[in-house]
Length: 340
Image 1 (spheres, rainbow, N blue to C red):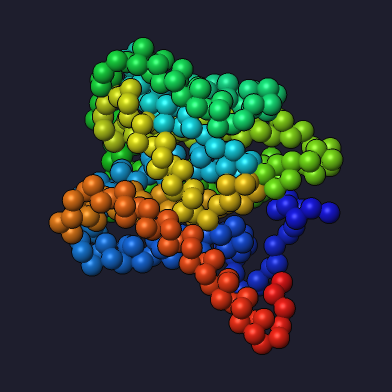
Image 2: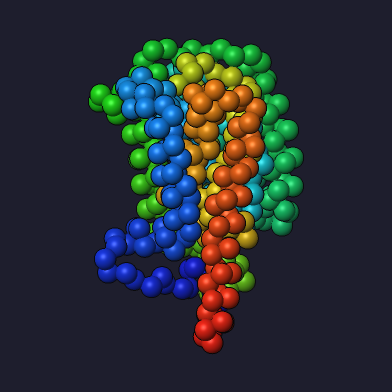
């Protein structure tokens, strides 16, 4: 018997909804607490975050990162890492921006999603059926996909207009940015796939114990391939929202999302060995990291310190639970008990 998530149901706590129990089991509590503390500090430094303009600006800043973090999470859950996410976002961004010159918005969106899925399919085939390491495959594909993005559009431009901005990044209702609506829909969809479908359980299972999954008669290769395709489509969604918020296509627009998407997953409590990670933790971590630059700006601190602050936040969230666990273990041993 393995200890993989797919085979180990979590202990039920009757007082909490199942989705919260599952999120806590997947390590979402530390990043969520970090998010709550960060937002408290942010509001103390800059109370105007709650105004309509600032809320919309902040939402448009963090939502693409949150969805890019979810795309990275899918690959981390199967025990891999995707170096090509930034390049995929760049390619889908310019494809969407240029497609709008001759296609209706929904068709341009479908084209961008198909391109994202195609990038994921390319990576997934080489990893799942070629037996190549995900980090090597995605690193190589970064150069290919990045070059294609610059061929499609070699400088910022495209055919985006105010209508696209309104649909992707405007206001659905006062104090409710459209980007938040899209993020909620994506989160619900990904949570449903991961927690309520056989495919989602297989993703966790492949990351926990691929041999056990294969021994159970499940096609692990197909699961890995599907995970890459799903991740590519999520990257495409992030690219479209990014294009909508900036009202332009940019072949370098995805570059900042490579390291930040990995940082968001690291802060979310997910295991880079695979099999453990949550949607809630990833989104909370991405929003925290996405707003650090704004907080430093309003606090009058040079934005170059953003990377140092991001690193300190990640260190703290990762280290504190380990310290607490070590102290608890020592206390239990000192009392003559045993640590399970």
